[in-house]
Length: 347
Image (cartoon, rainbow, N blue to C red; front, top):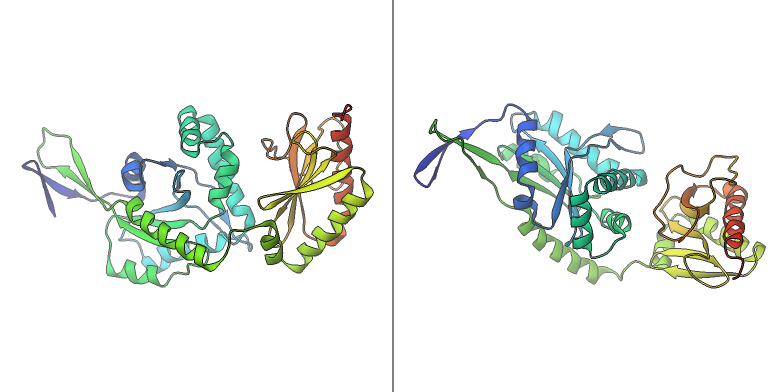
């Protein structure tokens, strides 16, 4: 295949491995995914609930259109059914694991924090400073599973059509070809590809319209109704214990989250927040690293950046999956409550 540009002939270049294609994709990701996107060269291991692992080649986040792409770079010469299809199927299955998206969010956010340009870009595009929360909101949507391949074949097309799509918005296949100049005095190359962001914008608009027609926006009540029965029972029992065993308690719903605060509502008086998951309840608390006691080691070591709590202490989380954990959960929440009170003596 020959490409003619400004009278100069370019011949098709055959990459030795996926890494060569991946390097080109990273270099030109804005042309492929749009100017509002960032490429993240991170490779966290996706784990299914059965602990089957797989690693994608990268991720792209579109901070304006609020969508994300899982990138898999392939060569057409690879065995489609023994290599490419199993890999993509593992991605789809791993997205059923609630920890998967959290791992991705943490890895991407760490890269943003460490890169001044990426941090500035994300804040400008999101038009807000709470990058992590906005990032997790984007990752709560279904991704576009994106295959970038050096040659699009009928076999690839047929294999992709048969792949499950229950955990992804769609599967996109894009051919990415590179040509090099035939003139020895010109170290030039050219790429031939169809931009993804243009077609995904149209798909995204259509999908959004379908969603609007299907159901209203998620609320605390709608999410609670969609959880397992045990989660609803945990929420009901724990809520009643918090409001009856602790003094001067009020509650508020913030979007899809349920917040408990002491006395007057505000970030400095919040001491617990419920975040729903289909099979569990995630509880955020205010954590005093100097005095907190956690004999069952329920609290995660991860520190959050004051989503619900302002000004003092650390924001931590723990997960409840069974009603037998409610007594232990109350001990943790009580400590958060008492710590919050001591820091607000004039309240």
